[in-house]
Image 1: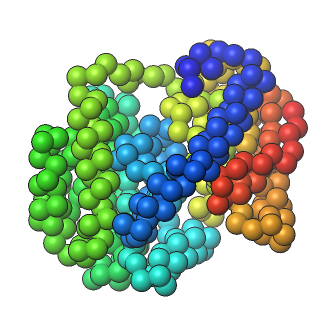
Image 2: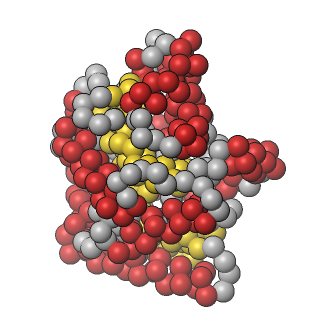
Length: 356
């Protein structure tokens, strides 16, 4: 999607975003993509869960060359999570239990991100402090160990850095030991298995087997970017606030601020997102003709499940609207509110209401 999208009228921007969601669903449901997922899962059945920041640069399937739909993402402002929050804990434990019941383990990739070239390109959720982001990722890992056991035999929580200048993963072992994919020559791909075994000696063999394709893909991807000119210093131009879940199609840098329902205080991150949108308009980084509020909830089956998703989406939209109205009345007048549900097996985003 061209960068010039930010300069278009709000109506055109919204339609382009909805068109992107339709393109994503069509690609996801294509025969080739469907067969690729089935074939991949038959070979690598470990459940893959990734906790990450809402930043559009953190696109793990793209950076690891993994088919869409293999990785279960959890996205939130700053990559900030607390597994003690009941709703998030239930989502995670059910995703893990689904694999366990089928006889497969689970890998939890707990990510943080930073820029090696410029500190201010790091994670805004932690004030661009990579050390603070890493410390939080380790806290999530400790919570995962409380949930699933410290022996790591069935569920392996792995802390991973993501260096956004080079799209490279950095695996953290015990202590200060790391494995920086961006520092490995692509010709050394065959040695990755030994490196991972040395870094994480307690990782079960089947989980390590299913982690390796991601690392091999990332090694090839990162190597392909070396020496390639990339636009790294992109100023903040976000014009969308997303609340809920089901935003897999949104991996566009500096476009959307995603607030997942993963904590007891939704008002604060929604307010923070509104602060950023307001600042973008005040600085002239985006036009002041409007911004989009998109509330979305996934569902699996028609009937009660879809009806409940509709209620949740409308609740989230109402809640976010009230927060924005109270915090930024001027901004609320420029809000284009949309609610939707997402049929998760097909990734089809289905609009419910649109109000300006």
